[in-house]
Length: 292
Ligand code: NDP
Image (cartoon, protein in one colour):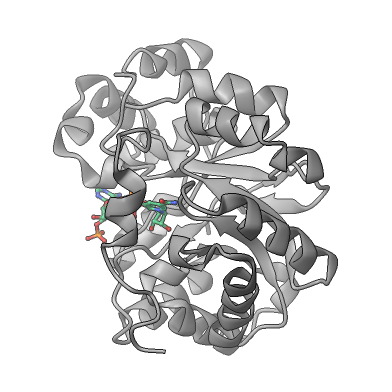
C-alpha cells in the first residue's frame, strides 16, 4: 500500500494534498470518470481539472460516487479566459459548482493571465468570502506577467495561494520560484512529467537513479519535484501508471542527487506565456460554452 501524500500549508491556512491527479486531455466519454475513480481508489485525494478540459462533470460524478467524504478530497478547477469580465466570472464559478455537483471548490484558478484578470480576481475574492471557493490562485504567470498584475495592485486585495505553471527537470522556473517564495505563494507543476517527453525519460542520470532505488523514471522525476516543495498532479489514463506515479513516498533522494537533477534545467519550457499574441491565440482556440 502506498504511503499517503503529505499536505502542504498554503498562505491562506488551507492544507492541500501535495500530490494529485491531472485530467487535461482525458475525454468526457466515460474515460475521465474511469480514470478519476481509479485514482481515488488508489489513494489520490486531489484532482486538477478546468472549465477548458470539458470534463468537470465526470470529475464531480467520480468524486460523489467514490464514497470518500467530501472534505477528504481536494478539487481544483480553473476559469477560462473568455469569462473574465466580472459578471461572466461569477457565472463561471456557479457553472463549475453545478457541473461538479458539489457545494464548494477547494481551489479555483485564473487559467490564463490575459484580459480582464482584475475583474475575474475580484469575483473570485467575493466567491471565496461567500464560501463557494476555499482557496484562489493563478496559473501561467511568468515573472513578467506576475509583476504586471502586482503593479496594478490586484494582489494587494488578496495574494494568490498558488501559481500553477509548467515545471519539470528541464524547466525548473528558478527566477519565478524566488518571486513566489518571497510572496509565500506555492508553486504547482503542470506537465510534471514533461508530458511524457522521450528525452527526459531517457536521461542517464534519471535512469541510474531509477535503478538505484528500484523505481521507474517517472517516480524519480515526481520524487524530485516533491522534495523541491512543489505540488504535482501527473495525468495518466493507464491503471498501472496511475498506481506507480503515486508510489514515491517510501524513498528519498540525497542532496547530491537533488543537485544533479537541478543541473538538468534548460531554463525554458514547451509553452512561453510571454510570447506576443498568446492570449489572443488561446481565446480564439475554442469556446468553452459551445455546448452549454
Ligand atoms: P504530465 O507531465 O502529467 O504528463 C502526462 C503524459 O505522460 C501523458 O501522455 C501520460 O500518458 C504520460 N505518463 C504518465 N505517467 C507516465 C509514466 N509514469 N511514465 C511515462 N509516461 C507517463 O502532463 P499534463 O499536461 O497532463 O500535466 C499534468 C496536469 O497539469 C494536467 O493533467 C492538468 O491537470 C494540469 N495542466 C495545467 C495546465 C495549465 O495551463 N494550468 C496546462 C497543462 C496541464 P498516458 O495517459 O498514456 O499514461
